[in-house]
Amino acid sequence: MRSPNASRLGGVVAVLGAAVLSASCGTSTPIRADAGGSGGAPGAGGSAPGTGGSQGAAGQPGTGGEKATGGAPGSGGASATGSGGAGGVRANGGAGGAATGGAGGKAGGHGGAAGGGAPGTDAGRDAPAAPAFTCNLVIGNSTTQQWFDGGFLTHAGIDTTRWEMFFVAHHYIDSWADPSDSAWTTPLDMGHACAHDASTPDRVIFIVTFAPPYPPEATYETDTTSIVQNIEAKYPGVKRIELMTLVRSPGNVASACSSAANNEQSIPAAEDQGIAAVAANPAFAGLVAVSPPFYVPTCADFVTDKPQYTTAGAADVANVYGAYYAAHP
Image (tube, rainbow, N blue to C red; front, side, top):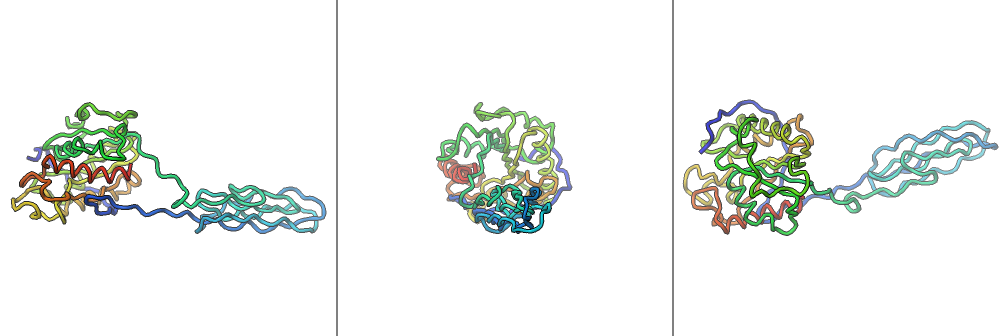
């Protein structure tokens, strides 16, 4: 049953696209590096050595990933103080090309050594993978406990020293929106805590839920916005907040696995729209994201007419989440 706390209206807008995932997780698109450009043009030289040119200007992002080319030495001419040529356009993570100063002087382009820039980096191929979060805290309901303790922590690729969870059964976003709600002081499930920073997780995954009858989009926006603000206040070291819905019936069709009304096996459009709007709120830029929708592999995973899972179903759902978070640590 839903909590008696009143839902608040209002909210903020925006959205983060998400890949649909069933028993297997989605793949991410590699990111290419920007390209290195050529070095600055030669400065005017001199018959007698002049003073060195000034440092070349910083290169702008390019489009490739190739090695930048250094500028050529200055040619002869009257003795004068020359300025350094502009630094070569640099690759993402790479150095710019060398610039050549007037009167035989040389100044390196931004990030580049005189005589040639260092090779750029192709981020899609050479850059290291993003490091895993030190501590991931999952906050949810009874179904969250089912999959988290039902095989998620033993899934290949899940580092148990980086995950923790607490849940409150039959507790919905209108209650979590209250910063003084007692749910926020719930002990960690089974006493299991991250090996480091257990009290200051850097990623918090919050399960958005509301019991039928479902509220309008504005309520989801208002309450979820308050929840994000609560998480920021209670976990000031958080670097990412992920908003997640319950796992869904095949195709997110309410009657796919049950003919009972209000079976909570599908997610209403207002919920998806509301949390997407919160994620796109400029105030949360770079912090809040929406997890992709997840689906049960089979209707048999649900307890009849309920959103809870059978024992086998909890294991199936644990594998769905495990596959995704093994790939997104």
